[in-house]
Length: 359
Image 1: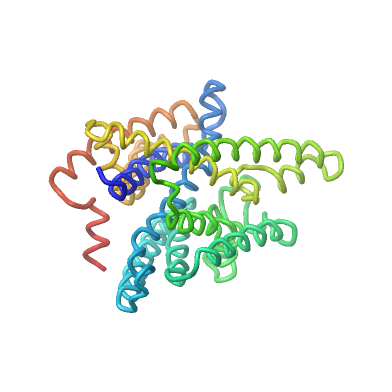
Image 2 (image 1 turned 180 degrees about the vertical axis):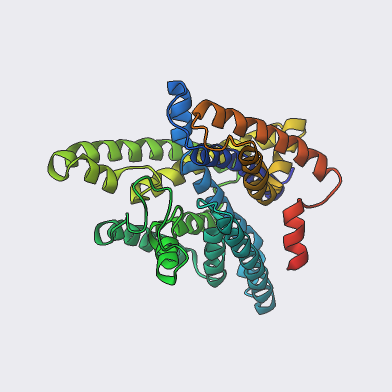
């Protein structure tokens, strides 16, 4: 398997795991699951919050760089135009799909944010690596400053379940840019750093061990820094304010959260590269790759089908963490089986096919 093919299939493989993590987090959220499970289950669920979706967006950034690499290298105006047009179409489709999910009262949608990130990425196809990295730093610093200057809780209820005024221009813009589930500040940073990484040679075989070790080390350092900053700042600011500014949970999304999320995502991607290269011909590996290739179908499906089934059975808000994780796992197993069966017969997933046809 050549290096480029390994990278692309490893992205699909990692994307499948990202979807699994998002399904667990979303089912936990939708079922209003508490802490009824074992301590291990609680830690797994807590660890996945904001990490799976961060991996998903970072992978999108790498994908954008791989997709537009020829246009960037050749500076061909025709290729640049075609790449931008393709990203415009994808962004439009994803935005509409996200809006429809929001109308169905799925408040934790990521697609409409993702669409805006892609739209912004169209302006950066030929931008230098240095400027992409500079923009990433700007987004990160701005987001941290906004936590101090802006009331992050504005619009949210006490439990961060509903957002007042979401369908007004002011509320929608505020949610999109500042304090939604995946606001542009700082979530666009994940896509930017993914674009930057996609232009490097970091994912080649001779660099993977370094990426794995540096990323794991970075995650340990950042999490330790977060711990000590919270500990030192709590007596001065109060524990809630210290966690608000220096925590590594996704809401609010601090600078340390983004940096930690990037490190864990890169470490996981390095592991995926090793697995895909070593177990390329394994049926399970191929099935996972196929699952990643149908990620959009599975994202929409786990909401419409998975949660729809629970709602029809009046068992949606059951509050059980054990049930949420078990149900998410069963749904993902079914998704793997379906993906492998579907890809043996069709080149694209159901929603992916619709997106391509409409485009």
